[in-house]
Image (cartoon, rainbow, N blue to C red; front, side, top):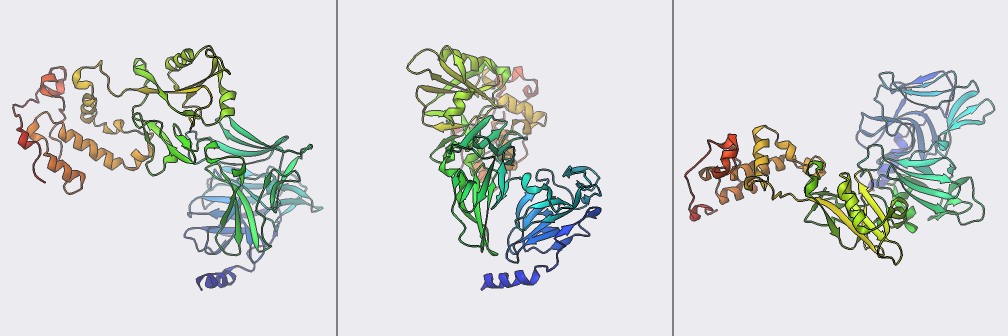
Length: 532
């Protein structure tokens, strides 16, 4: 019943004259003179200039927003009650404000300016030959000349989405900014080239070619009903059942190319993971994030002794070292063997690795290179001496997989968090905690690279304050274990720390701040923990 009401409402609120289907040069638009298309999703709006499609699948070109603040110049498939499906965008990574202006200049160029006048995007089509623009039924934005021939079209400049009937030709690609990355400029690409379709991840130098098996290779790869790569089919797809269904493919931030299907005003339905016939979950770069080990679609850390997940709720975010590697403590660096672990891609290992006379030389190269985090060594064939050596730094993909390749050894650099060469009071870094507490720099002790730590920053700070309370030089000022338990359970609050002297008084002579903090109080065993 509800779906029927929404379906009827859709026809009631769908504008019959949103905007003309064509526009001519010497026109300027902003949100005040565009037609606002109603949406049932909070803060989501389309401000339309052109419309096309059908009553069942209306398509609009104009400014699109999901939050009311950041706008993109987009072609969108409109569906009441659901998020609009953006099938092309001029500025996906550089949104503009609601005060942006779109200028269709008299020279025939589309020019998008932000509210402050900054040029964000243009078609770069300064030509008197441009007579107008239109939005085709398929969602293709076209600038045409006096003969109605195409001068520029959005289908030649795809973003992350392909619609049925669209071509991906040599020199063209769809791309997306990955969600889980340490590189701000990172992108995942699916590109058309001479031998087929190439999947790549930059700047990590990862690529995989989905080759055409036919004797001749096409210039373009078409997305038709039931296939991608027509006429030399590269991927077979589930076909759309009738004209009441519309399909589109999207390259998504996790690196997967997914086929979706929409019927009428229903929610888009995931139909197929297109690359799954050639790539398993663990084949994707960064499937389990930095230092993550991928096994049968599951992510884990290589060793809980030295690592912890970046995010306990999302193990695919990767892992982080419990102790940060510091170049100032290179003498404390060690290589820990990882059992049954290899690089996530054998082909990529071979392309990146260099020759090494021995495993020992490979390991030593990692230890003497402060930026090295992982060393991988594989013997040549049946030899027991020389082989391939791959050193991984933070600037490379540190992506691992379970199951060792033939004759491959993996080592990870660690730095013990206990420095036995320090005085006894500094071995457990209590003096560092004291120093940071005195200078008001406790935040320096929190791992800024851990999303989980940053998300729970207040809990982390409270745990450190509780630790300082328990580390008081004067044991009479330390809380009972029953009080500690109540604090941890949220039944009572922390007291202000009496002072920042945590080092026992017998070591205090080397620490000026602790010199006056001595106590003759020695607790009885029965006082260490009271009843709860």
